[in-house]
Length: 240
Image 1 (cartoon, one colour):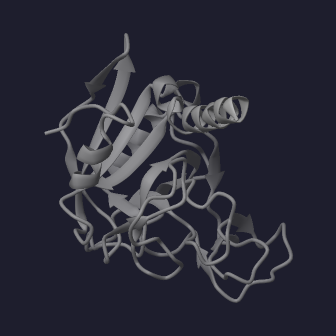
Image 2: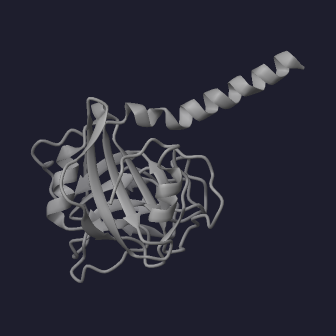
Image 3: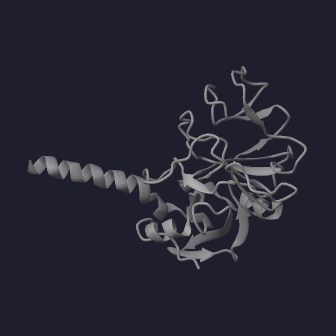
């Protein structure tokens, strides 16, 4: 019994370490913080760690998220109690997430970029059809056989996707758990999104060129009460 108990404790320790010790290795952090679960306007903070201390790069600025606020997404965190994100709920995912590829209308990547970049031509799609084998993936209609009835065009007349960065929500692509989550530019009317996080082109281009895979960047999106609850456990910086 004693050996079994020690073994279970070791498994729990390793599981916890796998989830949260990575934040100790994270040296670039973006926070998207709302007043509550239903808020659609958030403060975005950009932090960089030096000598084990978080430094705020510049004052937070306003961004917009899904028109229905936040719901818990699937990321690097353990599953939390509360409303869980599902496809089509118009909620942005709350939690800790990795970054995927950047993308944009310009075939030439922004100067200084360190993360992967994809040119969003007229054939690029993000598939939101839950029955597709390409659900929650960026694909080109020139490179795969289409099996979907619904997908987002990644290049169109509006400026929303002029630049963007994929957020690795639901990276196992579980059908119905939410798809195609990005940081992207504001549209013409700077409205809310259907689940992404939108900001000015200037701010987004800064983030795209600032992110450095060697610094293990992460994004955390939360209502402020959840941030305060998890701050110590996740070893997060203090915010005002």
